Amino acid sequence: MNGRQIVPLEEKWLEQMAQIEILCFSDPWSLQALAGELESPLARYFLCVEGEKLLGYAGARMVLEECQVVNVAARPDCRRQGVASQAMEALLACARREGREYATLEVRRSNVAALRLYQKLGFAPQGIRPGYYEKPREDALLMMCKFAPDAGAWK
Image (cartoon, rainbow, N blue to C red; front, side, top):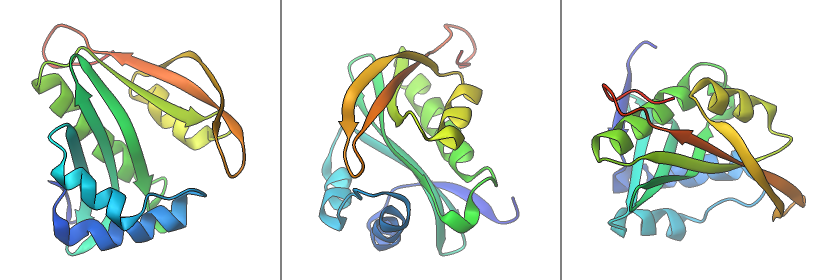
């Protein structure tokens, strides 16, 4: 974990985020869409960086009692090194501090690595969203993590 830090989203990271989106997703968020997250009072993003290099990030929208995770990515050369896990832990801790009661997310049913990460963080399957993803078309697994009422922990 050498010189890694978790930092909030700032404009200076947007270009690298857009590059990671292209590397990671068949339907990546555009630079403009990512920039829009900076303007949203609902958005919270936590980035895992090393110096001036963005390694990965996790983002959500905070709506009422819910933390809706909308974007999690790690550079392909940084996968399986705890990058997404660190960013998600910071995001969930923020949600908890803000008084959210639970977090939700959608994930491709075939994304085994992401499913393992989310289960490790306390997410459990809640249902299926048929045909949710395109390029290629695939169902999404809806997952939820309910926050424990004690000590900022989640379960």
